[in-house]
Length: 219
View: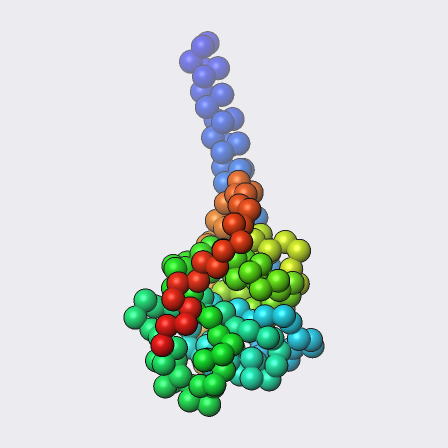
């Protein structure tokens, strides 16, 4: 009799686990559909200016697009965060010769950030140092949801204006038509979920008021 009762309990437990697994998969699938649906599919035209501009490195044309926005006076200063330790303003000027004067006066480089969390942390310190309450955020379209989530967590009272940069591949073909692009989008979705969970347990530290940019004027 006890063995029969154990078998029944085991079957019930297995049924509950299966239902939970199916429910979890459905939630993930719906979340992914919403995530993809909200991804920017075309270049945007900014409807207003901001105090500063922040560009997260890692993709082609991000920096040049951010410099173009700075030249158009869409922000007072530009932070390039996540810069490779060997890159200087002179290197960036060689790639963007039309913006040489802006690079010498109105651009700060952050060498310390190694991921999106670090980008957002450095952007918070930079924005607070300059008293900026609004930022144009420049990054790849697929990366924008996670970047905005991290920045909103670090700067809950700042106005964030997204300026997504579309890769050539995303311009000419849907994300599901290419294996590499599909992996990229799925990976970004999972990273976004992890970041949202992590933020529930994170607390943003009070700033000391000092500038934490690493060699911002390196040339």
